Image (cartoon, rainbow, N blue to C red; front, top):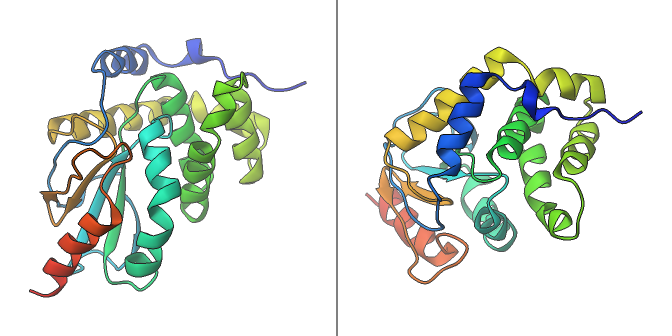
Length: 216
């Protein structure tokens, strides 16, 4: 029998935070925040303290984030992350449907640091399944199973009180930092926006900002 995500089992604290976040109507392209390391950061590329740090605030349920992931991430990763020219930091900011986003991020963390980005990217890449009528639960379980988690482990993961509290704290920290939209990008603490873009900052704009910092 397939395990079922029971969102009603989420803690009251996390559910209330989810409702509050859902009412914020987060939009694409926007936001700002500090460049300093934050609790719960997931990172790739250069080590902490690198000359250039690029921070992305995003959600696994945000279609604009998924578009950036598909259109821009491969080129950006090859040019700056794989070469260790920058430290790329990913920060979670759940967007509607918030319970699905929170569950997705928790599954990614339960999969372990080595598989975190695989799960996040896998969920983003599967968003079109929901438009076709697939239950998001099925997507989360499929991606989680692909990362080596059993259905029982996934159930335990998404109902873990400590995990829910940590997810709540990360979301509050993002909002407190002034982030009001996803995806949001900062290069050494300075917001990078591409006017008119429906998928976040363009590679050209990010590269311009990164290269300027590297040249200092």
